[in-house]
Image 1 (cartoon, helix red, strand yellow):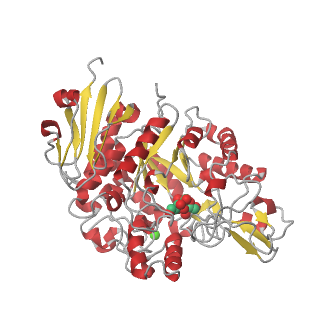
Image 2 (image 1 turned 30 degrees about the horizontal axis):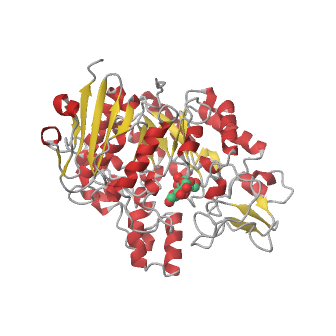
Image 3 (image 1 turned 90 degrees about the vertical axis):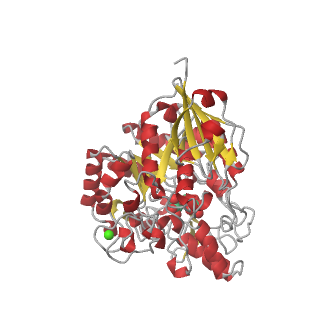
Length: 561
Ligand code: TEU
Ligand code: CA
């Protein structure tokens, strides 16, 4: 039997503070803004907030380049604002999970400032410094945000490693003092009352001892993922972190694990509790990638999606816990990506929500997903803010791989900036996000897609999410029931069942804009009860018919129960 845990029974809502709600009119979302919207989140029914970084940062990667792990950046408010937010959330029985970004710091962090002073500096070994090899970078790895993964520091004549931008030097986890300092920092956050951590690129923290060249890819650099990701030492470090920090309380931990396999996830998220509670895997959202990484106009194939999701559901069963997500601050909007932005926007957004939230694991909602927010129609480079998108735009246009117009079209499909446009609260100016000038353009479709219009409208995407969350809270089968895929459906329908002692649920989702037929099994057809559907009148039970983008959940009580 599955062990009961609060974090298995929770629904998490991710907040990207810069774009959530601006309480003081400077155009940037802030901590007071989050506090003001707690009643909104409570009404939606979520249990946990994961708040993306609001720590002191020069902001080259929107806060994922941290210069002080324990200070709130002035643009988001003050330390008191944070303490008040934690307190108010707790009063409303909402938990707070913070982003822990410890693969790298900002180059402005005092640790790095100290480290780069001299080869003999006390913190020299806190980062990864290497001599040039034949007058060049120590190896041929590329940075994820363009250029080489090594930058020469003129002063000491050595290179430092940065898997991400040069403003994000990688910490050396082999150094015991680094690990101790990170654990102490985490312990102080726990003392301050937080309920858990989302751990940024945790699968990358353990580096190899030697830096060898890898095979060169299309961008002229080698991809370091195969060497760095899931290096066996990462499990040693996480077990140590478990003993020194995490075992102190009943915390929630989720590791962002790029390039993770099922076998690796079983170690990170093992149900023996030795490492983390769960990881984010990216196989399903990587299905529209290519050799050019993500800069193409491919869509995620539904048959591939089913195969990947089924694999994760089936293989972690009884061994490790899944996290369920379509969206986060690095992904384009799911309704644009897998649904229909046009006529069936609302219905397809609800179908996608059903498909994900009825699976086994802890579901994550990214701000605006509950409204069916869409991608942004970028038409000029000046509208972009994301370091990755700007780098890709410049490189692809300069190398004439795409015209500026083509690249903007692809960016509107795939860029991280699609997730980062301000939250659409109302039809009013700037979507009600700010009274000032927003740091990034608000999607012009806020006049029709916004929270004010949807809350209280029975058939809105927002009300549907609210029902889905409530359903999960009231039915143990949705949390703990076994998952089994249905064979039928090909690349048009995704159907699966969930089952515990009490009941069996059938979930059927039409991933197309056309009507489909589906053979409903006898017990469901004969004594099934329609629990949830996104169409006014479902013909699934009566005719075995699905309307375009329909989703339906049918329940039968187990007669033995
Ligand atoms: O993302 C990790 C990561 O691998 C992403 O850069 C991902 O590959 C990319 O977004 C896909 O386009 C985490 C954070 O979520 C991201 O926002 C940060 O930029 C990154 O780490 C560095 O901290
Ligand atoms: Ca503000």
